[in-house]
Length: 141
Image (cartoon, rainbow, N blue to C red; front, side, top):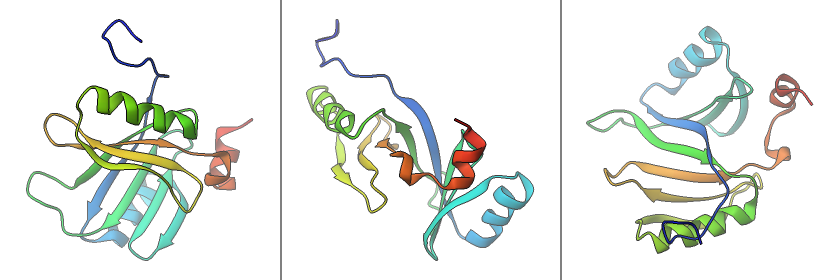
């Protein structure tokens, strides 16, 4: 237990920001073509994931709601098991869980919760195979 009475866990780091885009193609052209991010995964026509090698951006087709186009903030953790440890910690802290831990089709594992203002926050483990060769090359050994 940590000094605040919650289970001790590994630190998190900001992994990505996800945006809802009315014009997904225009946003992709800006982030990839103008800013130089690399497309690392396009699971379907409504979603594209980009990276600079250290900073990551998810673009999701949709209608932005009042207050902005942000979908969620993602923090990465070191292992798939850490997602489950964080789930316990968040429950102990009485944080609202929006989506329980689950393993995704690319082998990543995550959960979603809400911050006190209602912002959706994802804690995610990304295995090496979830990264494209282009991003692995940019990150180096």
